[in-house]
Length: 267
Length: 219
Image 1 (spheres, one colour):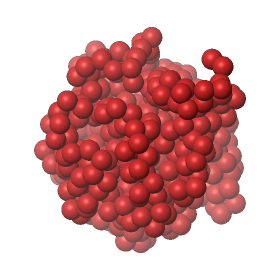
Image 2 (image 1 turned 180 degrees about the horizontal axis):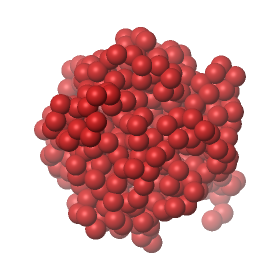
Image 3 (image 1 turned 180 degrees about the vertical axis):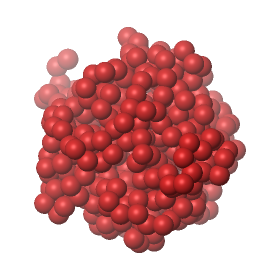
């Protein structure tokens, strides 16, 4: 049975792992390749690197991080942030990444998703969606008429695009996976926005990765059970060793969710 | 990159992405790895690995363009060790439903789309259930998780070549062995400890197969 994935996310700025709250107030959390390797040993099902500087000078640093990680940690690697063309995606894959995640560039040029999927296959194309709950509908319950706006440029620019519609369009264009981040919850440790996740996961067939707001193992369970997520991503609770990947997986298994055990006895 | 006397493994580079990971995982498992972009590179190697992510039709075009199509077929017909991974595994069969591509035809059967799967692509760690014991999975517990990322899977004509199955919507054959031809739908190079063990097993099978050819080697 397909296991629900637990994915540590490493936000990388100028070659260092950083973590913010609602995308700002960054703190230094360490060397990305070292952290990635540690997580792989601790049972991470995949590692996501997001280049949050996304500046041209950050590109070489990121490729080096991917190369260093791919030579030591044999788990899937996803890289996002600032990839704007088929050729740039090729460079990232050639450095050792398995998937590339597109965010601002996909909103600006949706056909980029199609071009990359044609060239490398949908399985390598992730569409990252940063969504902000629209004002005026506070505390909407799942099933109520909540709505979310797609936000780009690292949370700085509202687009007026409906996040659920964009999710469906991205899949139609060729995205093989969606990384859905609630900007309202990011770094707040107040739980995932399961209503947002449910709205999207119930409308697409590709895997949905939940992101933004993990406080504890029970949030991972809810992201899957209530949100319909196939994978759950978190950063600060792992970086700061508040919870281990193992403790999260144990909670998921106890809730009846299929997971890959951290230490699967290899004789 | 492996000790002297370690098996030399050629990884076919025919335009498929992520050559880095398979090369590094094989080296870490004890192989000496060469990247083969043409037939000449296949001389003096002990085994071939056909990796692959992407689509069947362009992969076949690339193999032909690199002049690797017939050398690869001959290699397998000579009974030399060859491991196909993901798309590489699918290419061993006769046809793929993906753009109705004609593939290598080394094994009977065709590759179909997993259309009844709950999610597609099938991305993530899934359990590999053994149909029968095989040295390829020595030391790996039945039901261990390996990393998959694909939308298609082969249906072998001869069910007897299946050594493992995996379920995603439907049950499909996730590993086959026929003589020295090995094929797996999962990515051992991305499957952490279980994957490293698997690649180590493959290298041991290669080493035992190539012993007669390297008669001067002292064990």
